[in-house]
Image (cartoon, rainbow, N blue to C red; front, side, top):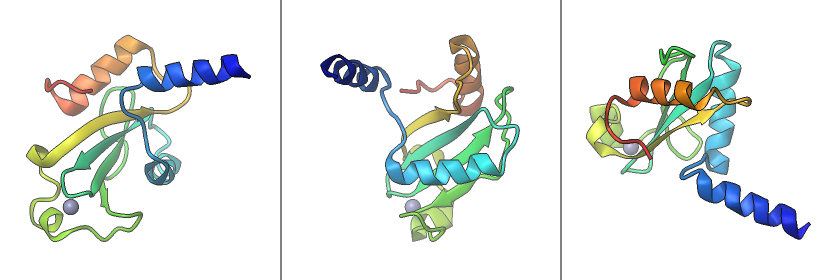
Length: 120
Ligand SMILES: [Zn+2]
């Protein structure tokens, strides 16, 4: 038991950012409607809204881009105005479906989705 806990803690540390509970529900919904998805790109905006879209194995969008806030499709005024503009993105990551693609492929998809900006 102790060993398991230790392993879990290690795993959490390695994954710099992972989906929060509220995001997981949204990600689940997106994946359900996107049979080609290998992952969901999650952008956390500085206003608290979230922008998400499924991506396929080529790094192409596999769903519509969704912006939401507090589990509702009711976003803030700023996002209505700029549609969640990139400079306001605080954190971004891809939530991979299980099984996740090979690391090289993950890197390629990330590069395509986020461009050459460093992704944590
Ligand atoms: Zn917003």
